Image 1 (spheres, rainbow, N blue to C red):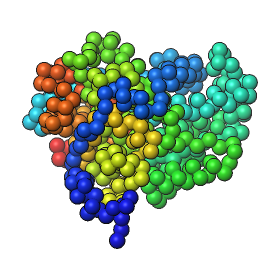
Image 2: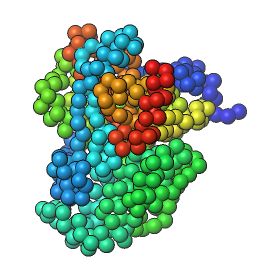
Image 3: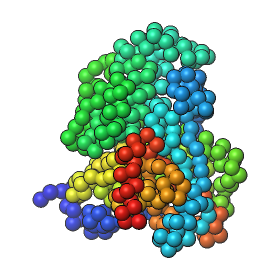
Image 4: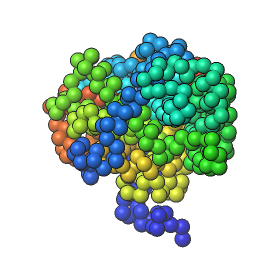
Length: 448
């Protein structure tokens, strides 16, 4: 008899009846009754505000270099940041389609428009490569912490970095950010891509001189192979999406930037004006890091909700059962095949699941066709073009509003919801080729 982490599927379903809905690929949600106050939950993460400060300072040191080598980073003086926009027409259209009003205001954080790789991965991925490069350059005496890092935009520096390799396993977007940044510095870059990675992402990486290694299997295998290859080579550095504190901290910096954007737009976040953030989740590094940052900035006034495909609810399963990375969706007969290529991770991050479990309020799943519909709807209403993965965030408010037990437990009264800010984190999209984006929109329009 086949068992999963010591139990049969029947025993799992008996202990957690919601698992049956996940196995049946039904849309589901779960709000964690064990979430702790921010101060207590943050104490269990093993990282601190000082760690986020350190990451923010490092990104600032690199800003002159980034401004010089990436034209897209010039308007922000080399600080990689994305726009924050209200989406009132989308809010009204979603409410009309669902027959449910969304109290408060709906906003979109457009990490789809981040420079370098057009996705949230331009935060963590770029940050980790820069951290590694800085450590090597400091050790070799190429720079000091007080230097202008534009000194590293030279043939001498590129020749130095070319002695070293950087590798990563990816479904696509992380690979883009790691590959492009590594190649720009001069590293020998290898990206191990899973079967669901989009062809245009592979082509773009190769155009930057990155070695793309393709696999017939899924994300976990690509990561394992990349890790294995790097382990046998002392000059190689492996960016481990499943277990990296550096990636996590690169994402976390986003929260303090968001705080400044809210202030400039007169958006209040406090006990009477809660912030509810909806974060698309694959292996968990990006949304986990952002959520950590949000909790350090907004404390108990922010509620973080993760969105996953019905075909890949790995973090949902891992946290709900308490088994985290010990189980994968495939163990339960769930195929991990989804239009949301960036979220096609069958096994969740060990680092994020166990450390962040007390800070993430809830999890919900989204069908592929709904993703396409939301892509089409956003293009129609706000003229914004995003990836299917990103559009999972727009389903979040409806799951929250229908969860009466959770609303009561979280103190989200009707009065507070009326002053709420619903923040959809748009994780990628603006580098998708027009032809491919048009096909996403067409698929959504078929059933809209």
